Length: 400
Image 1 (cartoon, one colour):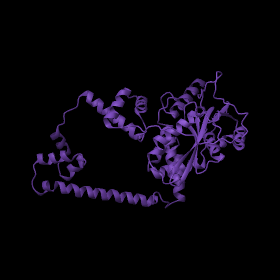
Image 2 (image 1 turned 180 degrees about the horizontal axis):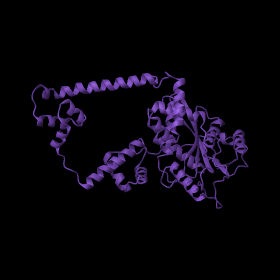
Image 3 (image 1 turned 180 degrees about the vertical axis):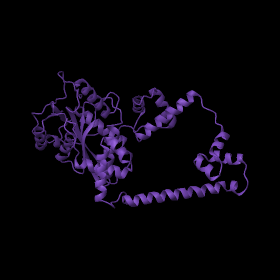
Image 4 (image 1 turned 90 degrees about the vertical axis):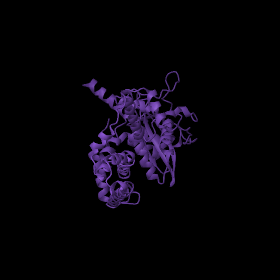
């Protein structure tokens, strides 16, 4: 594989994710699979060029001041509210039992340590007064598993269902049955979003010359074989459209059939041939296309993929095109399946004010969730990136 390079658009989207998500650079670097120092350099360069640029109407400096002021106001509001509730204890000599009873009644609304400090009592004394009975081992395990299920569900932003959460926990070494995960989810009222039916978005060009392009995804018996034995050699892709308040945003993808990883993508406000080429350029420049062997890229017969420009680009880059039949949706079901997950798990969950906001969210979904956290059956029940790394590690061990 070639040394990884990053497209200017990927760099811009990565910086936008750091600025808008307010997650630490280190966390975003892990989520996107980028070196922390590299991402830090991109963000630093952006901030030097845009010292007072706005994020949701405020520059970084003003945003920090605004957040600090909001936190200060929230603390003052909490203190005023608490003093109103506890003034009867402060105006006279209240007994310890009265104070501790008040703290116990309000612990769902305020931190215990904070209340103890305000009422000038010992936190340790309060807990000795409470003397909670220890739950049974079975109850302790149930509470532990409930915490893990909630953690994974929240990290997936509600996109993970029972089986995905079960596979993630199993990958973390937590022994639990899928049925137990389902029972906990029902108990908590947690439901994964449902996949919607998809519809075709590309249109064939009847004048395109594609008679020489055959379907390389069929075996000797004519059965579809959307699989691969090694990463980076059997790929597929498609494009779809997504509605924002500004207008349509078009997304092109490149998927590795070895593990289901989205190795290249491009989102823009047009659906010209350059859109699908840019997605392949990203896959190539990020080192995810293995030109040491024959590389096959499968698509439908949409006008972008049958154009002379795209055919020429593939030929110049050592990529063999593969195409299914016109109007047969199953001939590119892998790419369509990803779009269905993207729209149902993320895009349809809210409205999108601008194309930039939508594109940043798409990057977060693909790079942080779909590639690195979401378990895939194609990848053996683990995330695609983990499956690729396991293959590369095993391959290096055999070569040593």
